[in-house]
Image 1 (cartoon, rainbow, N blue to C red):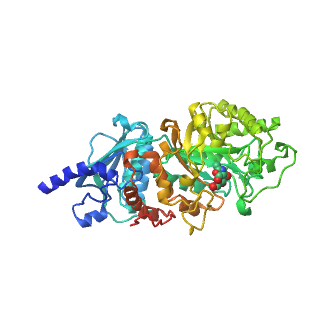
Image 2 (image 1 turned 180 degrees about the horizontal axis):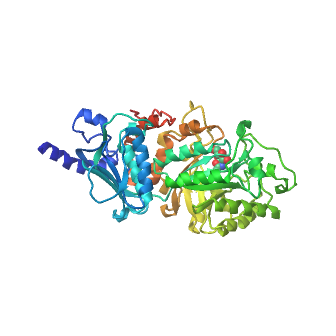
Length: 529
Ligand code: NGO
């Protein structure tokens, strides 16, 4: 008894260190057998703001456990129940919360610490119950992702497993550092099906990624149906890198993706890249070309050779139609217009193009986002720039930030998930270098670009370009485990940053990915379990 009390006191003292990963595995479980079965409260990615274990105590799911929900928390409750029923085989009814908490997982809206804001949560686990509180459903959803990671890895199985189903007791208080915690999927170079995109969304949501940027058009393919310009999809979408059949999303399919993401509290940020990276559009409509001649479809991986015709009025009718239809499909606030590598658009034309196009996006009620080259144009202060350079200085981006533009950090040598891990990686490119897990984790988004204050940083985003990737397994192999590393930089406070702590916590994710069927890179840097 005395011993247990000491351990309790000790754990409160070392808890912050544990979260920071400094004390490693100092927190002892009561018995070795139990330790095998129970996850540590600190084995969560991204690292929570505060986690205080109650040593020796656990909550156990059993056949009589209920999920009690406040009004407004039902959808999150159903999603949790769906996951838990599959692997536990328990009934787990979702019932209205009646205030009495025994043998229940309780999801409550309101009454959380104000620090948790709109996306954070508080989690209290005792031997009697699991109580999750948040101000908004997004916070409850984030808390559920933590709870998933606190249950044994077999909870991710798609068929019933044997218990026990213990959750370590303690208290978690958690909320994000940055508003934008994103990844990008390039469905233009290789098309991914609706089901593949949905599965990817499920995987990224587990790491509290809240935005998915979809790169919907490029030289090699146009992937979204535009009713006023139908050949964009039917012809421009008919191939991909390497000459495969490509594909596109009908507007109904695209709405389905947006809705799937919304339920997982992921906002889709659609991108139509322009004025460069437009061969698929130029091939589909001859009138978009300055010489009135449509080029052939393109299936290689060169960049910088295509441009919309800046001097023609039809160009802006085209942009207006595309932006109007895409904005109508987009409940989120952002619409990405690319703007990168416009090597075939003279600088004056580029500025003129952006001068005319940026207001179109705003007129359709969306905040324009562009790759950082857009800083060369006169951007309205509301526009967001996505920095993808390899260096740590960029005068134009810093000046744009002084004018009010926010910046998303996607430094290519840290966050590009299409770079090879090391020379032995079969997939991927190398132009920004090799990126192992430690490289993806070991940089500071708030201070990466010289003279760019942290207050100008909207968040982080890890782009996944698909010149060399053809399906969900290949996408997953490149994203995991580097995406969770970038997700942690976006969510967790700076004080929790510790490579040693991170590699331990990341190691605990491996068995989960195995259960989920997620292909991942077994980085030699991580002590996989
Ligand atoms: C660059 C280029 C893309 C490539 C990618 C490959 C940006 C913003 N434009 O990043 O077209 O696919 O590199 O890594």
